[in-house]
Length: 296
Image 1: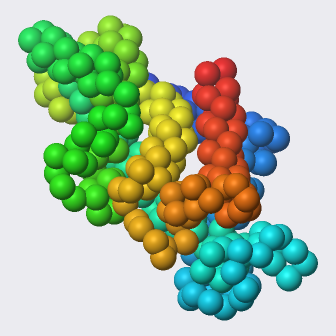
Image 2: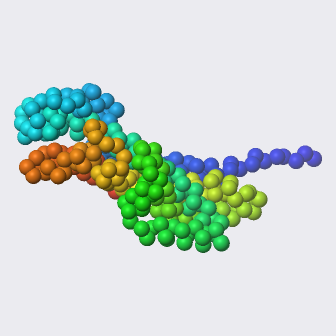
Image 3: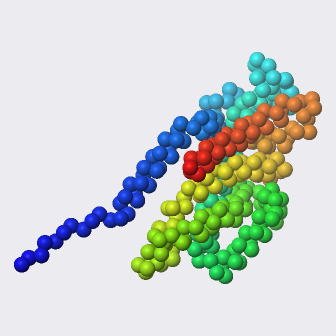
């Protein structure tokens, strides 16, 4: 009498993967149909293009002095006017996005990665480690972001581009970790986590292979939200003298250089300020759209 072997059923994970792919496709479809996301993405793409190819978009050299008559008001020849050094402000604004678009995303990515790791550890391990880390996070969050950044930059004595990235990333770490920790605390009580423990899986595997994929939604939302804050933080640090300095066409550096001349030379600070505002608003539009989609 021979036993007939029946085929084993497909793994329970397969429908889960199929559902996850379907959810990602649906979210992408909703994002592409969101007017706020599309408007914000177009503005961001424009400034990224300007940062990558300033020579193609800037009609004149943004750095060389005495190219034109100094301190000219906006006109047909110079729509944004000229500055006190005879440079075309339109060219400087179009070429001024590179620094902020390099530092802000890098700092946000660093803070998101470190904050996600810290949130996973505190939310899953709990106990003494969670208590100590939570007290540290509370202490950091009690200080204003810009004040903390200034204190660290002053203590370090170096305001180079990558030092600013490191400082803003470290400041964002506790902010992101708190959000991730809350999500991990909810996920850690679910059946699939308990099943992984019963299989004898180690804590790193459970955190990064089981829990992390299920908390990516708040991580993505947190990244987009923090990016807007990072742009503002980079601009603020540059404005008060940290980071890049003139003759760089950086937007905040232009404002720092000419804000004392706002009366009567208002155009020298207005247009760089509007450029910063447009980028921050665009990032916030995308962040709001992503938040709406992921929180459905």
